Amino acid sequence: MIGDALYATAVQIRHNVLLRLRDPAQIISYIFLPMALMLVFEPLYQRALDGGTLQTVTGPLILFSVFALGVVGNSVLTEREWRTWDRLRASRAPRTSLLIGKAVPVFTVLLVQQTALLVFGCAVIGLPVPRDLLHVALAVLLWGFAVLAAGTALATVVRSRGDLMLATDLGAILIGSLGGALVPVDLMPGWLQHAAPASPGYWGLALMQNAVQGDLRGMLVPALVVAGIGLALAGLATYRLSRGWGRSDLL
Amino acid sequence: MNELVEAAAPPGANGGVPSDQGTHATLTAMDYGDPRESGDDIVLAAVDLRKRYGDVQALDGFCLTVAAGEVVGLVGHNGAGKTTFLEMVASLIRPDSGRITIDGADPMQSRGLVGICPQHIALYPSATVREHLQLFGGVNGLRRRALRREIDELAVGLRLTEIMARRVGVLSGGQQRRTQAAVALIHRPRLMLLDEPTAGADPETRQAVLDVVKGRAAEGGSVIYTTHYLPELTELQATIAVARRGRVIARGTGAKLLEQLPGQVRVRFGNDEVRMSAMDTTGALVTLLSSATAAVTEIEIRKPSLDDLYRSLAVSDDR
Image 1 (tube, rainbow over the protein chains, first blue to last red):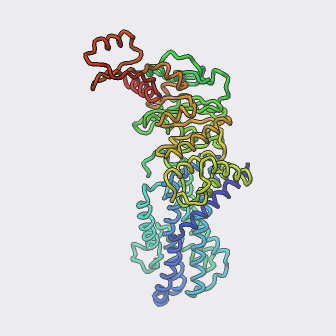
Image 2: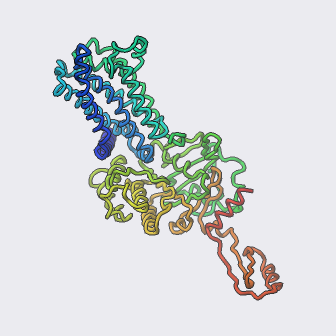
Image 3: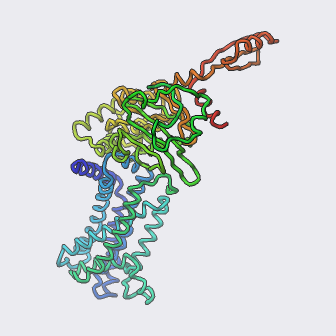
C-alpha cells in the first residue's frame, strides 16, 4: 500500500517536472531579474547603509520569491483550466500523493531560485559566505514552504489567470516593499515602520538576514511566524485541492 | 437482465424513491428485469441520490444499477443530471443524500475500479499522448511491463500509434478525443464512465471508441455511456436509462422500450401528406384513403427509433 502511494507520488513528480521544464520562462525571469536588480542597487545600498551588501542580496531575493507565487499559482491553476486535477482525483492514487507530487517540483523550483540568488550574491555582489550554511538552508526551506503554500492557496481561490497575475504582482510589491525588501524598514516613514510587521515579507527578510549572519536566536521568532503563515495557508490549500472545485463559480 | 424496467427503488433500499417516480413515462407496467433481481453480478448500485447546487436540484432521487459486462446508455437532455451522477460515481462530488456502492464499497474506496472520460477535454496540452498514458496508468497502479502492454494495446485499438510522441495541444479534435478515452481506459477499470466520449468526433474516432468499449464490455467491464447520438447505443447493444430532471424515468433494453412505442404511417397525396400513428386502427387508415380526393403517391411505414423513444419519454415527463 505504501509502496503504491510512493510509486504514484513518483509518477506525479516526474510528470510535473516535465511540465515545468517545458514552460521555464517565468522562473528564469524571476532568477535573472533580481540578479540584474542586485547589480543596479549594489552601489546605492553600499553608500546608504551599513551592511548594504546584505540588503542588496536579501531584498531582491525576498521580493522576487514573492513574485514566484505566480509560478506556484500557475502550476495549480493550469490543472483547473485543463480540468486535469479532477481526473487525477478520480484515480486510485491517495490524495496526499497527488498533493505531494504536485508540490515537490514547484518547491524545488523555489529552492533553486533562492539558492541561485544567494550564490550570485556571494560570488558577484560580495556577500560574505554565511558562517553556518544549515541556518541558511533552514531559512530557505521555511520561506520556500510559505511561498509554496501561499501560491497554492491563492490558485484555489482566484477566478482567472488575470486574478492570479494581479494578486501576485500587487502582492509581491506590497509584501516586498512593506516588508523592507526595497527600502530597509529603518528608513521608512514612522507609520510604515509600525505597519511593516503585518507583511509576511518583513518576517521573511528578517529570517533570511539573520540566517545569513548566523544569528540563530534572531531567526527564532521570524521562523515561527513564517512557519505559522505557511501552515495556515497550506491547510487552506490542501482543503481546497482535496475537495476539488466542483461547480463553484471559480473558473 | 436486460428486460424493460420502470425506474424504481430496489426492494428494501434505504429511503426508496419518491412516490411519484415511475409515473412520468408513457411506458408503464413494465416487467421487472432489473439486474438486481436476476442474481447478476452487480458492479454499481446507486440509490436515491440527491444533489442541489444553489437553486438547481441536479439529482432528485436518481437510482441506477449496472451489472458486470453491461453497457448502460444514459440518455437525457442537457441538465438531466447525467454528468453530476457520473462525477458522483467517480467520487469527485458527494451526494447530499443517497448511497452509491461500487462492488459493494464506497466510491472513495473503489476509485481504482473506475475510469472516467469527462465530457470536456481534460488533458495536458504540453504533454505527449504517451506521457498521458504513463501518468494515468502510473497513478492507477500500473507498472513497467503491464503499463507498456496496456499502452500498446490501447494505442492500436484507438489508433494512436502514429501520434504517441506528439503533444496533445497540437492534435486534432478527434485525436484528442481518442487520447481522452485512452486515459480513462488505461488501467482496465471495472466500471467505465464515458460522458459523451464521441461528442464532435469524426466517424473514425467514433468507431474506434465504440470498438474498444465493446471489447472491454465483452471482457466483463461495465460501462455507463452518455450520448445524444442514440444509434451508438444500438451498436453497443446497450440497455438504456433515460434521465430526466435528476432521476431515471425509464430503464430497459432498446428493443423492449421500442416495443411499447407506435411506428408512424405517412401517406402522401401529390404535394400533401398525412402522418398517423401505426397504433391507430386499420379502419382509420382505410377511411383516410377512401376519402382522399387526390391520388395516393406514396405510403411509408416507419418503425420507431430510439430518438422517438427519447422524445416520447421526455414529452410525457413534461406533462
